[in-house]
Structure formats: structure tokens, C-alpha cells
Image (cartoon, rainbow, N blue to C red; front, top):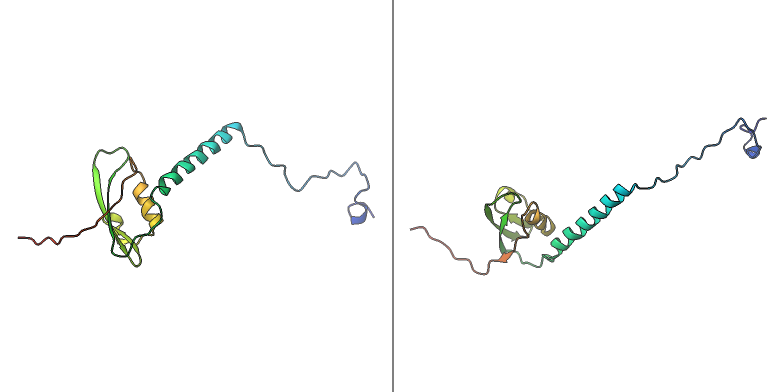
Length: 131
């Protein structure tokens, strides 16, 4: 019985058998990738800091917020209003047909924005009657 057929005799040195480890050694990350990883970590920290400035959702159902947003590369400013409902936040504009969580709303506010918009709470609503 040869060494391959007898599992208890695998230690028998046989120059015709080449043993290869099943696991590969981890590859070292090239320096250029280490720089990219460090840059991505800094970018994540910066984005987390931007999101953190808005805090948590402590608003009541029925609250209305407004903000102005200027998109990167554009010179036009758009004004948005958002309404808090029992199911989430509803936004004016194209995204208004979908309820958003607070985190999704903040993502929308910051997404592609030229600067971090200021959210204002509407404290008084006045009904406008056309004449």
C-alpha cells in the first residue's frame, strides 16, 4: 500500500509527491491601493460628518420642512418642501410620490448638492385664497 492510499502513512517522504497548501497566502495590498483605501476612508468620514449635522428625526407628523438646493455644476437653485406623515417624509418634485425615511431624505438633500442645504421648519401656514 503506497503513501497516498494509506492516510496514516502520509508522512512517508516520497520524492514523487508534491504537496500544495489548500489555502493561498494573503496578498499584500499594493501601495497605490492603500492610498485609495485611505482616501475612501477619509471620504466616508467626511460624508458621515455631513449627514450627522442633520441629527435624528425628532419631528412630529404634520411638520413641514423647506430647503433650497443647488446641484453640482449648476447655477439654478431649487426650493423643496417635505411633509412628515405617519409613513415617512414626502418631498415635492419628482421624488414626491414615494415615502422616505429620515436617512433617505437626508441622502436626497445631500446627493449631488453643491453645498449642504439648511433645513427650515415651517412654523406658520397661511391659506391663500385666489381672488
